[in-house]
Amino acid sequence: MSPSTTTTIPQILKDCRTAMEKAVESARRELGSIRSGKATPALLDTVRVDAYGQMMPVNQVASVAAPEPRLLIVTPWDKGLARAIEKAIRESDLGLDPAVQGAIIRVPLPSLNEQRRRDLVKIVHKLAEEGRVGVRHARTESRDRLKKMDKVSEDDVKHGEKELQKMHDDFVRKIDETLKAKEAEIMEV
Image 1: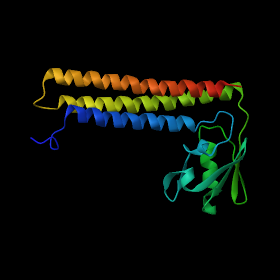
Image 2: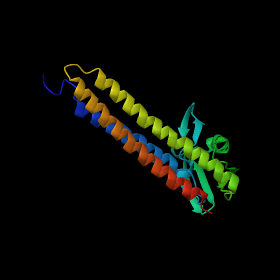
Image 3: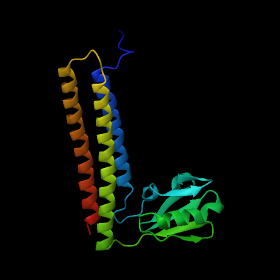
Image 4: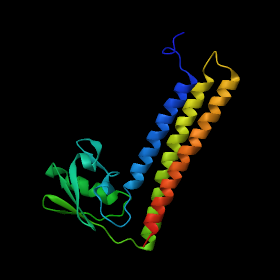
């Protein structure tokens, strides 16, 4: 049997590591989009707009700029989408109050009060949990692939499962560290 036609334990572990890295990177990107008091175009990365019959990220239908520390300017590429973008931003869980002014949408950022900080912490916890779920899903999928392997000793499968668990724990720790740093950044007055 050539190695290219069979799946090996190292290959399963490699695939799992890749999937877990993607989950961690996604969680970091999502957490980075949550604001900690300063305007950044990435803040709107999680907002989806109903455009042309499908849900699209704001940055695919408009340009987003932060000309001032407490203001975002969204410029739709199609002026007809201005109201849809405004609605999407308003209905997002970011707590923003956008206003359409001619061809642009002004999004002033309110200062973070204690309650708003707590709400943001809840949001970042939810995003971090989604990252953890991605890591767990990769582990479960890889464990199932290990168990389906034939012509492999039980000891090798058990060793592979231990490696998967160790990898899982490492990646969850990375997500938790990112979460802790983001939480501290949000609560900092």
